[in-house]
Image 1 (spheres, one colour):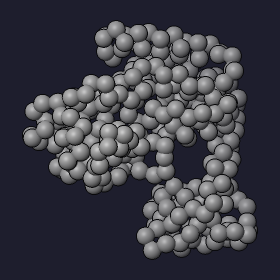
Image 2 (cartoon, helix red, strand yellow; image 1 turned 60 degrees about the horizontal axis):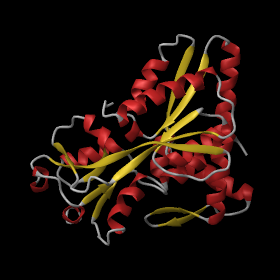
Image 3 (tube, helix red, strand yellow; image 1 turned 30 degrees about the vertical axis):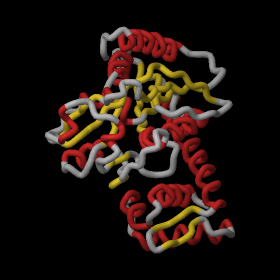
Image 4 (cartoon, helix red, strand yellow; image 1 turned 180 degrees about the horizontal axis):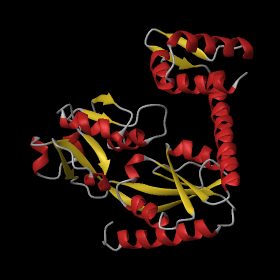
Length: 300
């Protein structure tokens, strides 16, 4: 079994489609399909259920995906650590983040950390579940997300709760005043990201479900920018954290909700029980100041 087989498998498992996975890997589809079949033959089980509309992981495939991701994370961490030792000049500090937290405090924290010329900041866009695995494998040093995930090796802390706002097509009838959840439920909804949960799509969808409201999810997309593009195209609305309002997008109007208690947390994740080094202590100091400013109304 080669490392490339693991990378191929993870790409197919994430995309649930051979064509899209091949495009992501920059290879042709036939050799990718053959490689996955070789992997299944070597293991002795089917990793995927082939369906007309795409692929579905078998129970064995789901387990193998988790293990493959951890192996690839460890390999990447090994390579990065090797480079770090060989260079011997800079300390590498790796940060995982979900895109919706990168419009407020996080860029300010990164900017201040980068003032240390002996520090190299590496950013990894990762879903919260991926951040947990990356922390455990050593791929990242700290993570920023929005979901609570219980893991004995990782500690999480809520920095603050952030209001959600509706991103509506400019000029939409509901854009003139704060809409209620009942009003929004009548508008087609765009959710992000797609893929297996838990994720931000589960949070936003759950807000309506817990109120006994049904929504018409017209499209699931991979990222925030695509969701906003579809809103600008008047396909529907989406819910976004307040700090996303900093994204000026033609054709999109951000509107506060009638219920101002609808929020989403910003959560920091660290390895549990690890004594903070000088870089982590500096990061914690900067974060404490930024969070105090946020809570005190001195945004960001």
